[in-house]
Image (cartoon, rainbow, N blue to C red; front, top):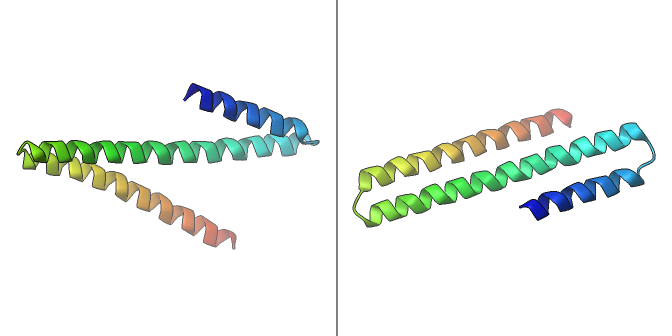
Length: 97
């Protein structure tokens, strides 16, 4: 993860060094940072959802169905939040067009 962050910072620095205008470079840096944060959040949400579902699978294997369903509800909440975020993003895209 540290290597990934260091490489991302180096890429941002090299890209901004190539740009002539400071304002454009700052804007580009902000867009890259926002996109990186979105990708990180998406990856983290996937990891959380997968972990919760794996835990539910283990709980169900050991005969703890109620606890497994509680874990599945947590995963469903993550999926619901992802769907809302996607819907909002689509609305923003439609407003731009």
